[in-house]
Picture 1 (cartoon, rainbow, N blue to C red):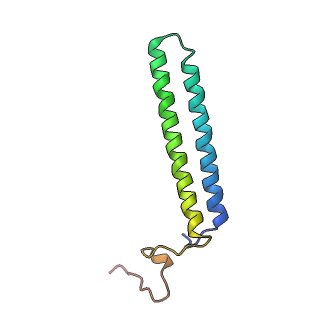
Picture 2: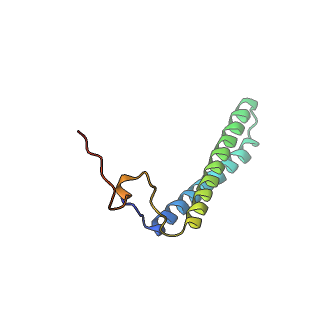
Picture 3: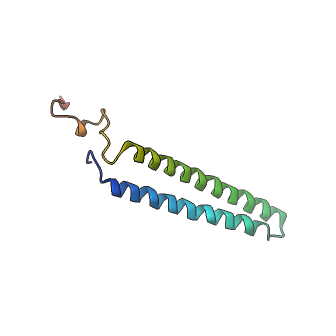
Length: 99
């Protein structure tokens, strides 16, 4: 695993995940609208709660991906590696060996 990833690939990943979650959000709204066309009360309740579940998850994921991308943009194009990552440690770092 590389210490520093390509920033463009990271932005592309988050943008594609945001688009996918937005598509599922639209699908959930479509199912919600379709739920009001159902005449059976039992089917209406099931469809209504299923659509709200889809909307809730897709909206929560979209907000999470947006916040991650915003955090990544604030960190800059090449953030420093985490200090606990042994692959990204400096030259004076001693690797632990199994005895």
